[in-house]
Image (cartoon, rainbow, N blue to C red; front, side, top):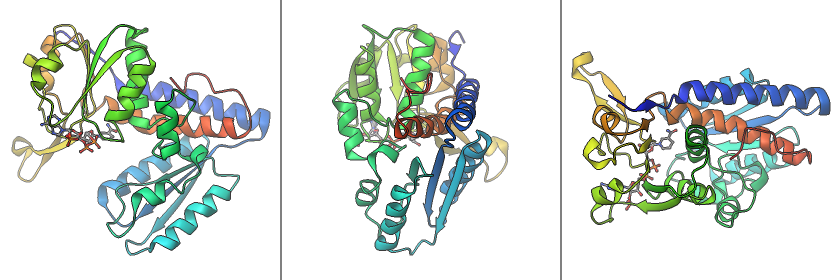
Length: 300
Ligand code: NDP
């Protein structure tokens, strides 16, 4: 294996340190304690783990953490009422409604009810539009973390060919916008892309956000390219015992690492950066709300 390993776990720890430093300074100098409210509807086990981790890391960074856990049969009016209440609450600077929501709730309506300046997930149409227009916005956490790692590793991304595999609103599309903003030349590939392997083989930077375990193999990768593996896939691992699972990315790690110049592992790559960037976005939102300068090192 020859590739450099881009250590997202270590990088996320440095982002969290910066967050804590900014929080301490905001509290001391401006009596401003950034606050993040997380709303969870229902009992999806994965979402419960995410929300617990978010709450823990929020509190560890010195911020105020507010959790609203609602039963799965919560009606839309009640949920909208809670979002409106959080919009109006001056101690809350970031609001995150954990997705997926139960099917009877209209996710688009709920997300677009969050005040755009408190939308730390960056999913509100106003933030989507602002990112597309190259204006200051709240940037979705997973692409933000991915770009931070790319910039940290490469410095300047000017002139690099980037291929993003996946066109979701959460990862693929905002990732491509960020790469464009950083002067790379992005291509967005998806399930209907012709000759996907050849397209990927042209890339200096590959961002895989597909949701298909180990789909991208080393023979797709241009020698020396940088591979950012966003995928989180749970697959059976009979070698660990009956009924056991392991987590793999969208890229086949060993074969890609043998060809790439740098690669993010799964787990320990993009995943830890996502929550770190959520904290970073909350600090940014708090600073903006008070008219303070943008906190350094937390945006791209
Ligand atoms: P979506 O399912 O919303 O999007 C998947 C995208 O991949 C779609 O655009 C789809 O194309 C494309 N795709 C599917 N199959 C193929 C194929 N065979 N060839 C090319 N493209 C294909 O997923 P998300 O963007 O939400 O997530 C992607 C992955 O990232 C998942 O593994 C998810 O778990 C992970 N993830 C990780 C996060 C983290 O913190 N690290 C955060 C968010 C997601 P089409 O549009 O044509 O259907």
